[in-house]
Length: 197
Image (tube, rainbow, N blue to C red):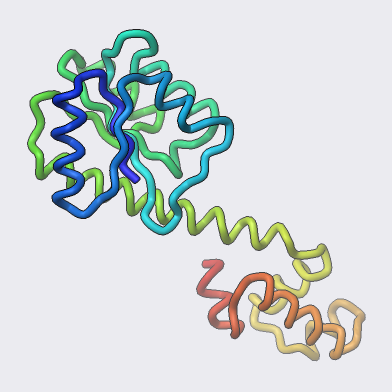
């Protein structure tokens, strides 16, 4: 989902049209507070399509930098990359925003194709972050013993070696291995290794 945060109706409409021309779902917000209110306390990311924010710097009420600060404080930049749009930016503002994690910084007027190419790159980065988060969430469901078995499997050890190293039976290793594969949603050790590399 492309989130367009700009106080100018014309800009929101134009960006919405550009997004639609590339087959991207978009939602517009007339100000920073309206966007944060819609975002709520918990961000429900669109893992399948990714998320990106096109954020105007100068807006009445809460400006774009304040919205960006909120996203940074919530740790959302990986899943919700921010591309700034401004007609009033300067080099120090752009450099500071990029150093703090903004995905990009465009001055108005902007090149439509360049902007939308960067939006698509930001959406891809968001999808990748969502995938990483999902893997970490699955890893968190493993018990301490399953983590030990996992580490030994990833080191290339056979079940018998894992059993010997942990002082458990081969059957217990097989049960742990089955639980690990189930929780990690894989079918083979090779698939598991590829998932965690």
